[in-house]
Image (tube, rainbow, N blue to C red; front, side):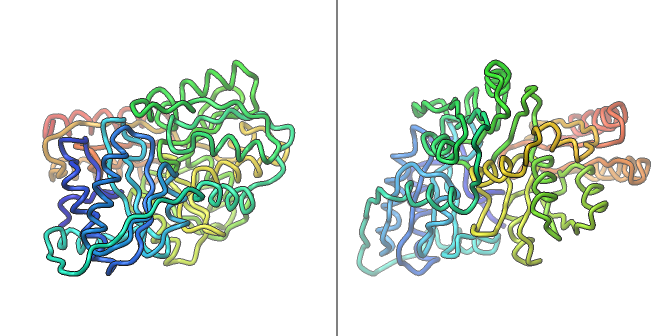
Length: 420
């Protein structure tokens, strides 16, 4: 069992769950696990980032590795540029008080559960060799931007786009990409101060993007999370277009034969895929499980409702900027509203319950089974513990909102009584 690693790396509140000492030990253990070599390190714009980056680099050097520090850089850029190992100091979409570390192997792939267990087993392992070195690089941003624009861009002349950088790692990068392709760009959430990442802006809070899109009569808005591996959109009317809808648009535009999704994915995407003869592979929640399925099945496209969109042609992982550019290219003269309407969404009701322990009791499992049998394929109920927070998540889905709300309310009351 992993003690520190969750759904996406190690994550916690800085100074409480996540300390410089732990980050240094992780740098050391990961370097031992990868048998030394060069570790490429990026970070997002959190105020705690520089200090934790230094701690992580100390751990690399202490294990005889070469720490290659790139400064602020989106997570997918680190995956693309990973050396013997890649690491990002980031807590992704979490609030500013959080931070974390996530890893990529030399192929740019997220680590398996087994690899993370092996790293944890090395947290206190001895090393008797010579210390390593630290280098700083300043060209990584330009290299990444050039790759994404060239491989995923298209002519966006005449398109009016609002780009929300979440005061995170895409600040200055994403707006430039859209401008280079000819779009008229309004950038928001592009003034990071170390304390405002994911606050009021970005994929976790689309309200500012909705307001600016409608106020400026933009064609659409694109929002990233703080480290750049998520992307959501807003149409010209200010309506949210989620990861499932984006995936549906790309699935048809790219004419793929297979798409990988998670258990949270809307049943509407499953129906659309079936109508078009596209095979759907379903995984646990977490973009790394989607990635594993794509590599295993030989697929190219996958994603999550939360905005992780993965397209593995010319890439190794999910990339918010690549997904945003692909989405704009897939419109082909249509509005985003028209493109999104290709998928009929099942009404969903969701709830989160903060808990002291995340084990789902048998009474809850039995009630979920009963409701799913009652819905008989015309809806579903899903209950799962969060991989990153002390929360149990509830999802109910049905052909009408009243059914989904009722099912969600039933399970919410039971979970609250049993675990709240």
